[in-house]
Image 1 (cartoon, rainbow, N blue to C red):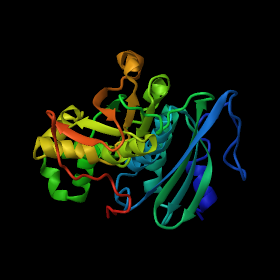
Image 2: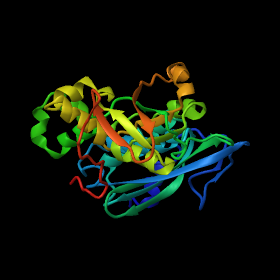
Image 3: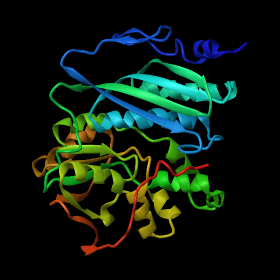
Length: 324
């Protein structure tokens, strides 16, 4: 009979080379690891649930990528270097046709970022994946949300809005006829964690966060914790040519860029004295960065279009809105 331990042995054991800082991994009650000297450990946990974060019939390889990439993005937002991950996988039943592509994609991404699966749990129930990632940050450096200052410049990595457009395609099959629908659907699942960019920002940024609930919502966390405000220029929002052609108007595309959840790009603030060195510091990352606004005194929240204030009422991604 194919049970839990057969599943672990076949799909999760001996899939990776062992890191030197991992002393004991799968197969015992606990993993045993050792952190290097002069670092602190950054830890993040996220859950993906079928019907909330992905459709049950979604490509399992894409689901695996999304699960791990979203967790790695949390490490990137702190400037951390990935090290270890634990997984709790709940399955309605053992489905080898689902597990094989899921595990192949998971370990492919894990190996790329040199993060080792060190433990977890498997159980029967509604399909969900919970990951806990751990990484290293230097003893005296970390990116936080509460250090933005008035006058700092606001930046984002990559391009925004594609994930929301992809989700629209998933939820409304008639939109598969729109330009670049297939590409945008894929981008909803296959984000790129900005690990190298986060590490480079340790010496440059005053505050940072990853965009998981939409730029409006996530930048709002920086504003709240730093007790500041912001002015954003919607004409500066970086958007792909695919989104521009998919959206019915440039204004709709801009609103997608402001509210798109599960982008897993970074939003960060940079003091004026560091602005000139930003491009050269990030050149080795191959990551596009765009200045989209500036930090203002607390209470100011402006969306501007050619200097004119917009009255758009926008909100970010809602995790309690199901996608099934």
